Image 1 (cartoon, rainbow, N blue to C red):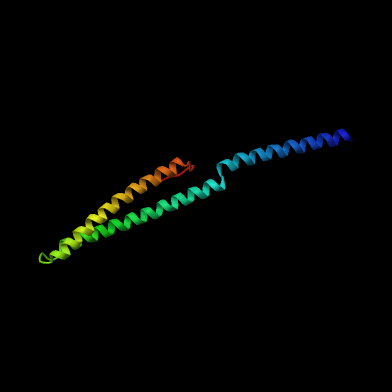
Image 2 (image 1 turned 45 degrees about the horizontal axis):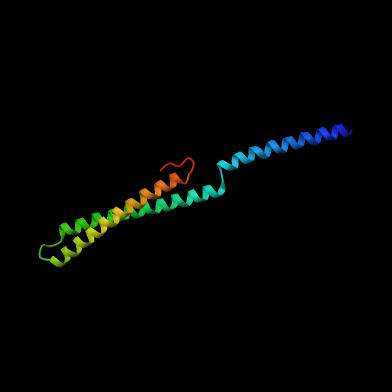
Length: 115
């Protein structure tokens, strides 16, 4: 009888170890900390993409306003040109930040990410 309980105990011990080792391998792939960090990084990237799109729309609007501004309104034209330069600079910096964010997402090791 003792041998039967010993074999039964050994069988359950081996089964539990096998099940826990399989759970461990699954948790490495789907680590909650890793996925939340990746989710945060991709959310920041998506916000930056939206910001870039808004900048591009404002830049197009500024260009249109420069074309339709009257020739005798020199002050308005000058302000629009200054705004245009600032928007172009901001767009350039936003594109650099976006590229950096994408590299960080890949570098941080987010599995299966598609940008």
